[in-house]
Length: 131
Image (cartoon, rainbow, N blue to C red; front, top):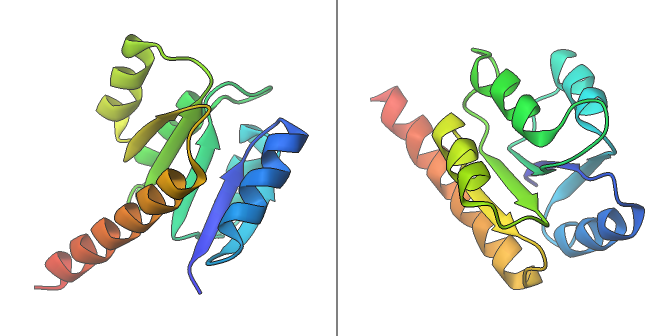
């Protein structure tokens, strides 16, 4: 079963996203970016990361920057979700290496399809690297 790291500081939304994703994936939940970064730094490697953009202590954008600059983590697809439809933030996240940027509220099926696309893309990249 593929592993997802879900990072969300809103307890109700976190619960909902976990319920949606746990039907198909092994979900690890963190409530802020700093907690997630510490977990990832301990050699925990999920197949994908789904993170809120604005969180206390370490936001999604900063966490994404840390991950994409780390040789051991930069291959992990990163999906950002945010309650803010800011074209500049979306572009900044995608330029930094986010796989996708979702604006809340979004359909649960769309989240699952983006997770599946990200995992497929990662698998294709792994196969290409082995050639």
